Amino acid sequence: QVQLVESGGGLVQAGGSLRLSCAASGRTFSRYAMGWFRQAPGKERDFVAAISLFGFNTYYADSVKGRFTITRDNAKNSVYLQMNSLEPEDTAVYYCAAASANARLAVTTDRYDYWGQGTQVTVSS
Image 1 (cartoon, rainbow, N blue to C red):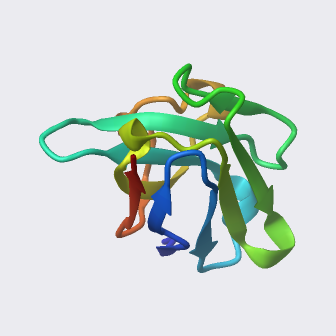
Image 2: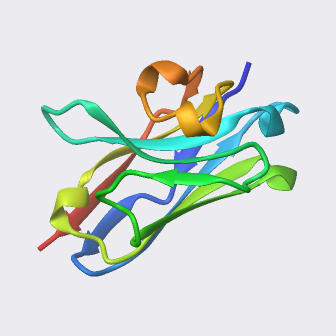
Image 3: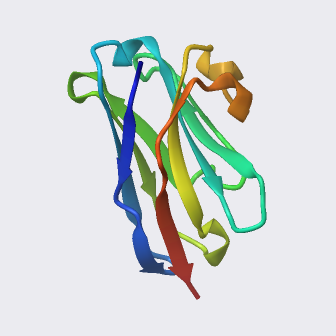
C-alpha cells in the first residue's frame, strides 16, 4: 500500500513557474515508477510525465516537453514536477501516481496502482 500526497499547487501568471511535490508513504517507493497526470474541468485525466524506478528514464507528453521536468528522490520518498513557462492551458488539477509497470509504458491511467488526491494549478493570462 502506498499513500501519495501532493503539494505545491497554486495561482501563477502565464510564463511563471511552479514546483509540485508528491510525498509517498511506505518503504517500497523505489519499486514504483512514478507519474504525473492532470485533469482540467470537463476533460479526461491526461498523462504529463513519468519517471523510472531510479530516475534514469523520463517520459513526457508532447505538450509539456521542454517546459516541465520530473525528478525523484528515493531517499525522501518523493517525486517532483518542475513546471516552467506555464500557460493558461496548463490549468488543471495535477495528480501524482505510482505504477508497478515499466515507466515507458506508464502513460495511461490504467497502468497506475495508487493516486494522490490532487493539487490545483491555475495559470492566469
